[in-house]
Length: 195
Image (tube, rainbow, N blue to C red; front, side, top):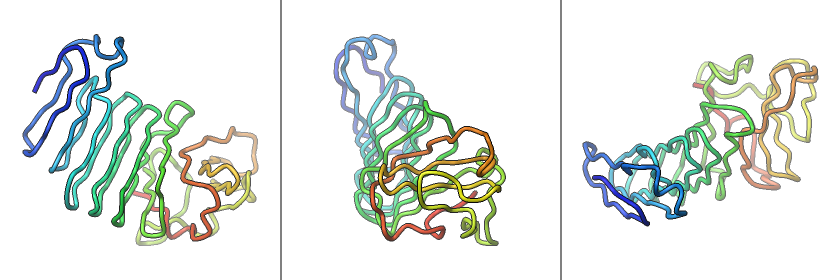
């Protein structure tokens, strides 16, 4: 499916469907394009929004600032590069982060106790996990900065930010991964996976 200028809406119901905006014209006119999908789907170039419609399906973004909305089922949602807004919409969802840096800070707007965050261990190196890929309890710190010299994930309940500190209390800069929500009293290392 190929769109043009203006706001386009696509309905996807087959894993072989491809959506593309032919030119960069849409990015310049402020129109947002949306894919409604009943199957797992990865956004193509120049398409901003993805809405998963049913069941346990997955959604992957692109280099733009995407809005990705899950279904009531168990979704695996990966924003990709860009500053994305992610909604699980129920189910035990997994939010995947395979990039770091300020230009990739996503926001999860409905993270709850059934959801998980999955970090790519090749990107977030130095973090320890158990045999099931669950973040070691000693690698998660609550507050605004790391509390140990090893690589740390830091959750700041006041800002809702989840950050990565490659050298713990050393001098390396803190890298915000995502805003996951303020005052998440249930959050612990069991909610963070390394893969």
